[in-house]
Length: 318
Image 1 (tube, one colour):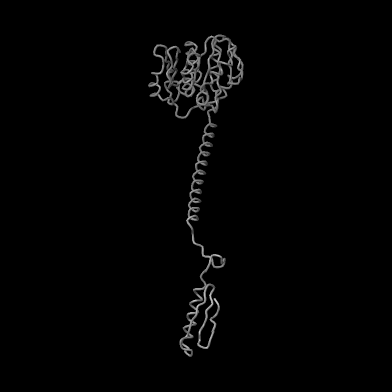
Image 2 (image 1 turned 90 degrees about the horizontal axis):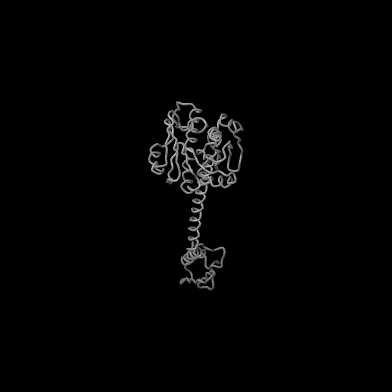
């Protein structure tokens, strides 16, 4: 806004603003008080004139938040929240997966004694094959497939399978993914298919603990492929048909086996084609040879004695 301009002798003033001229007249040409009033109004008008007068003046723009801006802010907040949740879920899944993989990598190892039976001796040749290991003994008509216990090195069962093969039943020790039969329940199919040229008349399957339970799943689905099924400190949650002979071997000092479930699931075994043997003084861990198992009972018989009774029971039944 420009300064007031006197335009005549009567003390008339013109105030020039950007949009309009404001005229002030002093009714009394000699009245100094009117001049003061005019100057006061001029000052007031100057203050008013500092407000923006049009949207084209970049120096006088006043930004007023719009609904669009508010919506964008809300969208950004929602997006950040969703991304945070998704990131958190991904991190949680990764932590669980890593923890699970670490868990799977921790397992019970075979003892030096067990590994000594992975060598050729006493008429038994041990061969490494794509499904695990083949214990080739003097027999030619019968073969047994063995599923190891959960998180137990498969070679921990070498002494038992070596002993069975020595007495006429060839044995196939299956190596499971992550040492968990749960991940390859039907691997026995591959063993049978890969060795069909050997001319076996009878196929049997056995398993310890989790391996026994998973072998039960296989027998339930492919009962026509096996003639016998041996459960070692295990139970089958799936029904086994009457056509399959079942042998269940348990140990009196086994504190790992869930006895209540074991007794309850006996209903899944063929009533007229089932035999149970209890090894007095034996425990859960001595069905293999991988050291003492956490939570297990103390065995009052030797490892060798328990293995001997297991071998004799299987040979007698099959």
